[in-house]
Length: 176
Image 1 (tube, helix red, strand yellow):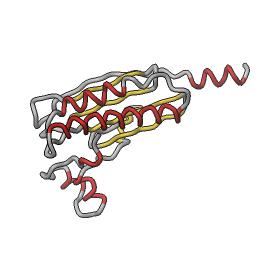
Image 2 (image 1 turned 90 degrees about the horizontal axis):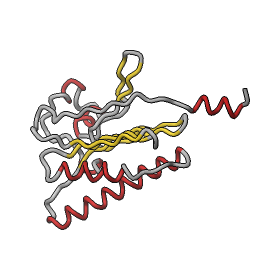
Image 3 (image 1 turned 45 degrees about the vertical axis):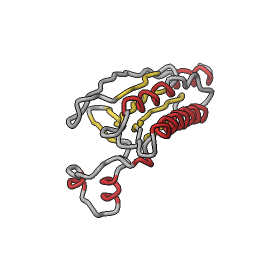
């Protein structure tokens, strides 16, 4: 077997992919949008920021932008394409919010997995989570970008207290 053939067999991976969304326990509207493009090495979910204007629009704008990622040439190219699409979506959402007035907050979390050959990255903003499910175990790969998590990191709250923290959870500067 040639080394080129061995390389091809090592990078030929199969993915079991499934998608499910739920509105959650607080709101009746489901503002989730997702992108599943294993042929491009992209899986992502965007969840509109509940309690603010147009969360569904925000998550849909992000998902639509990510859907245009196309075929990457390398792992670095895939990451650059992902970042570019999120920046574009963010600029579009900021423009919409600006037209609506200074008090308009339009935002969404985003969590994405990108894979190119044997390289992968997990990218997220906000409190949408990414988990690794393997061999009967579930491991959280991302960390929430919210006030409660920051207070746990600083030792001000214990993890069990953060679960019932009643102040707003998303940090707008870490949302798209």
